[in-house]
Structures are given as structure tokens and as C-alpha cells.
Length: 206
Image 1 (tube, rainbow, N blue to C red):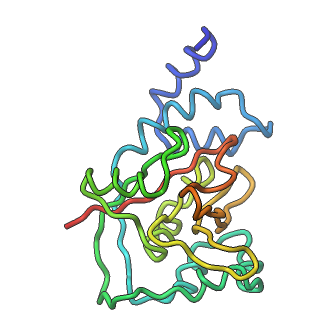
Image 2 (tube, rainbow, N blue to C red):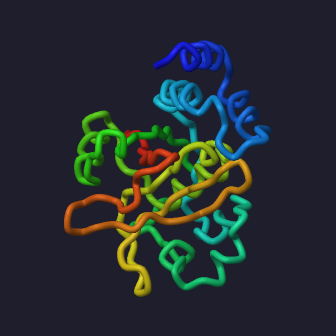
């Protein structure tokens, strides 16, 4: 890390995540100057827990609408998204529940999905399902502007695309509900490299 990067890091270490996001969203350039420092700061922050209030009785399409995604019209008009918009839990869970979520990075260390799940379980978490991921998008809408938040609880199927994982994606201009194509051969998501890092949402076991 050079001198300028160290100065930037020292500056953002004293800022809250909301202040960092404001800096990101209000930046006039597409690629902001403090990228390295901001990711260093967020890496510290997102290891902390997120409290979620999940209503497991709500249909996924209703939670999607509550998320106010910029690609909402596309989501409900495209058959690619049917596994998400029609998603149902395998077992019935009644009423709202307070749960604790945590984000686990897997692209930085090139872990497979199976390895990330094992890592979660050792830490006392299980992979978030689609409803829990969508709830995260509603209650913490700005986080996905800086990192991708993904549900690795189950691999969804699309006839047009093949297997994929649901993903909350965004940038300073928009927030979207998207997906990551998944390789059954090696357990990796495709296209995991790039400016934004992928984090799997885990939910604390009780």
C-alpha cells in the first residue's frame, strides 16, 4: 500500500459505513479514488452482524416489490427470474422471526460453494435462503451498491440459463436483483472476478 492509499485508509477508518456509502454515491467519477481504502474499511465492518426481521409467510414476489429494485419491471417480465419470484420454502415456518445475518467472502480466497457452507457451519451459521436474502435487500438496501450479496442456500434452475444463485447487485446508480451462474462441475460461481466482491449471506443457527 502506497502513501496515498494509507492516507485514504486512515481517513475512512474514522467514518461510518453510511458516510462511506454517501461518498461513493456522491462521487462524480465512475471509479472513485478511494476504492482501496473503502473496501478495506468495509471488510472490517461487514464482518459484524446484521439483525433481520424475516416474515417467512410472505410470498417472494411481495418481498421483491418491497425492495424497490431498479430492474423490477424486468424481473417480473422475464422467465429467467421465475425460480426467484415463485420461490417457496420446502418447510413451513410461521410468523415473523428475528434472525442474525453475517456476510462471508468467498471470491477473495477462491473457495467453492461447498467450502463456504462448511465455513459458515463451523462459525454457527447456515446459508441464507431466498426469503432471507430478499429481506436483507429491503432492510439494508445500500450495502449491495458496494458488494454483491448472494444466497448459496440452494442452486436455482432456469431452462434458459442453467443453474444459478440469487444475487443482490448494484452500483452508485442503481440497485438490482440479479443472479450468478453456477458451475456444477467445480462448485464455483462464474464471473466472480472484477471490481465488486461476492459475499454469501449466512444466518445464525439457534
